[in-house]
Length: 74
Image 1 (cartoon, one colour):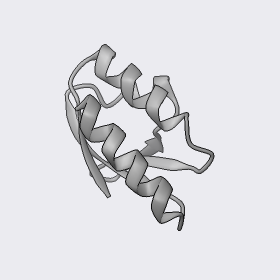
Image 2: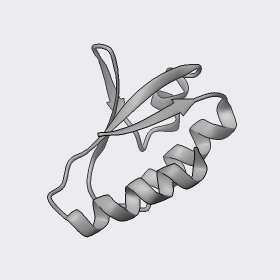
Image 3: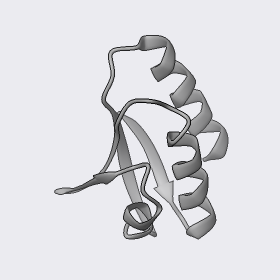
């Protein structure tokens, strides 16, 4: 899992745009809430929250790239 802070609308947009580059599902989890990290409406429901991103793939190269991209925008 990858940690991310959805500080504001701009950070939500950056997260969604980054996640949409990948062809596998990515869940955004906060407590018991799980939403699609590729959905701007869903991610904006988590504004101000720290979330965990759960990519649904076994592709280690893609996971490495995703984690680095998330770190760069955070």
